Length: 148
Image 1 (tube, rainbow, N blue to C red):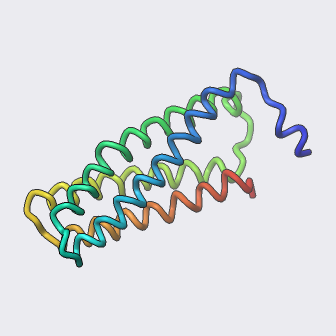
Image 2: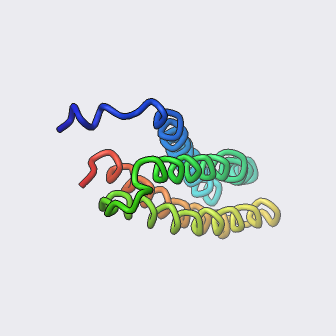
């Protein structure tokens, strides 16, 4: 069975690469943003870390999310687009991507206001919200990799 999974048409390589690359960059940028937002609420480098957090979400995580979703939809149309029953891992991916989009937008708003006002409380809130999104995305990574 694993030999069959490794054989796929060459036309699937680009959308799969785009999806996986976007997901990896998204999780990494969100993790960096989460840690820096939480550290900004407690450390001496609060202004710098709040800026790092906001820019990590805005400049890196948001475009990575868009690339991940484009790759996912592209792969879905190639692999499962003809009315086949969806596997469980596809449903998990859709749920975590949709909920994660909302959490990412909330995080962007909170961290943007935290940078503007210099608020450690909003920075902490942005860090907690984004940490929830990172955990959800790690569950999706596990589901996509393990295919339960």
